[in-house]
Structures are given as C-alpha cells and as structure tokens.
Image 1 (cartoon, one colour):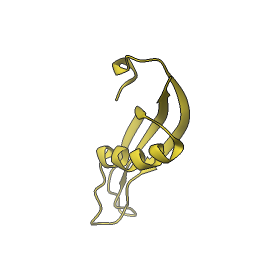
Image 2: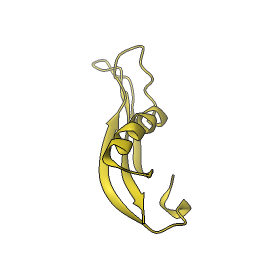
Image 3: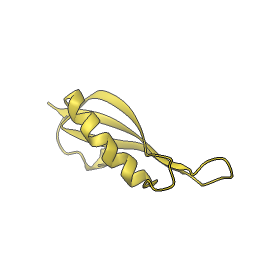
Image 4: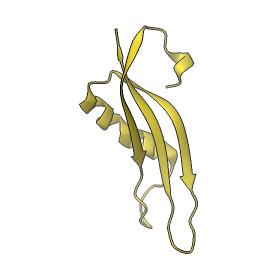
Length: 77
C-alpha cells in the first residue's frame, strides 16, 4: 500500500527492514521482501503496511544478491 491510498486516519507503530534470502535458490525480489514484512508487521499490531522504499541488489562475484524493503506498520484510529 502506498501512503496516498490510505483513506482512514492512522498512526505509525513500527518501521521494518525486510530482506530476502541471498542463497542461489531463494526468491530475491523486493516483492518477496514486502511479503516477508507482513507477518512482522502483524506481530507489532499493525493493521496494514505502507511501503517506504524497495531495492534489489544484483548478483555479483561475491554475492547472489537479495531484495529488500523498508515498510511502516500502521494502525487505523
């Protein structure tokens, strides 16, 4: 969800950094990083998440890369 999509009043309750696995067989997209953040946000008591930033590190000689996302957990008032 993007901030402009929110139609109800809300408050921020947590900020989460989420990363995918970096092994050869893991899914390394930022979409997967967002999916991994959802259960963490629920544990914080969030009703929804707002995506703040996303990134995907490419495969290099030293790494298989990974996807990452920063999300805010929000609670509706």
